[in-house]
Image (cartoon, rainbow, N blue to C red; front, side, top):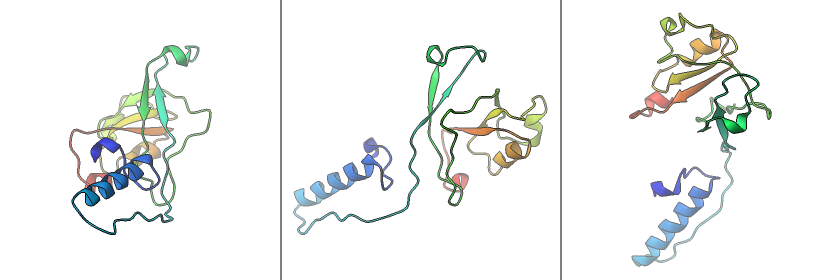
Length: 146
């Protein structure tokens, strides 16, 4: 099932997983297996990317690009950027503790922070960061994601 990608309602992986499971149920002899459509409000991630530019005049098409994925939204507000994107200096701030900002000016910057950093993303926002990108951990828990 993990091979279908996200199985969140509204994404192709959800339909693929549902069809796979329905087929497996039929294969083992279960009867009256059916799929039903339903309406649900879910955030849709339309994709994003981080392009590292050496300078503002550097052509984005010639630079390394890393895909970015949105985290589950805070209440009803999804993570968004304007259509033209955003630019700023990129800094890695570890877990985002106050001391992690000592040697940088985070105002208007894009900050990369460890995902398992609790509510420290608020430190970045309070210091004027333009955006926070979370680095995917090797291990995490649901509590880390809330």
